[in-house]
Image (cartoon, rainbow, N blue to C red):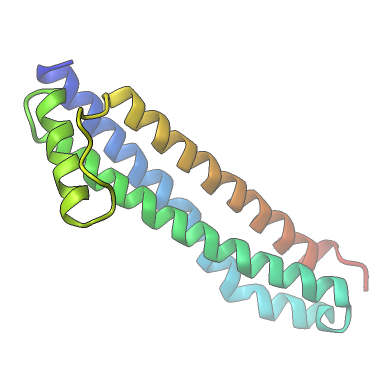
Length: 147
């Protein structure tokens, strides 16, 4: 793939990744900031299961934040790819950056755009799973836990 269609696709993917990384972070930060208030108002700190649910919510919040940071990094890599005229030169540029940062060894042949997108989608799925665990644990500890 080359030309304008390639640049639109990679730039659009980068913009989508920024959005998909930002909204879970905003919800997690808001939820974690009010979690102690909600839990103490309901007396959840006296129930062992509620404390466990709060710990699970905190751990999954950290996972969401980490995965969102990785998605933002992927968005930057896709923007780098979009700045090149074709898929091959964009892939070589990304592989060069990753090799210089010592994150991945330089491959013999650059990966195709569809392979890179598939890897990013797997990362996005992991973020959504961690976010779902956060929401369930947060709601369980704060609102659904019997007193």
